[in-house]
Image (tube, rainbow, N blue to C red; front, side):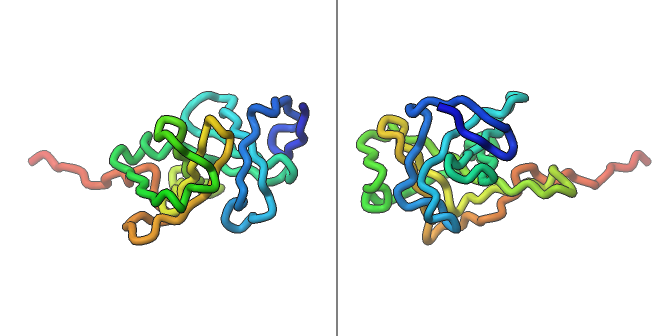
Length: 151
């Protein structure tokens, strides 16, 4: 099937590529179907494209790529709607904010990860209550401006 997108034009997907978000995504509760698109340049960044809203797409990434000790602790009732029975069926992505003026200032929403069930093709955004994670966690560490002087 073909879908129209603002960023990528018309693209071909299969129904097996579609993830259902029974509760939508925070701020977009009415948008229930998305597809994950790989970046044409390769690399770790991907796109979560809404099927029914051509202009709605989120840049997403596996949080373990930049935060290796990131842990998502959820209660079964938090993910019951996406029917994850086995941990191996699930994976996590986080939404990125990419500022136009300085892409090095990319931040990730570690407080509201997206949990995917790859077997059932269902997904949900959850909020990690009681965690120390932030909605604007810097992806790239700040470069040290300290310079050692040779005496």
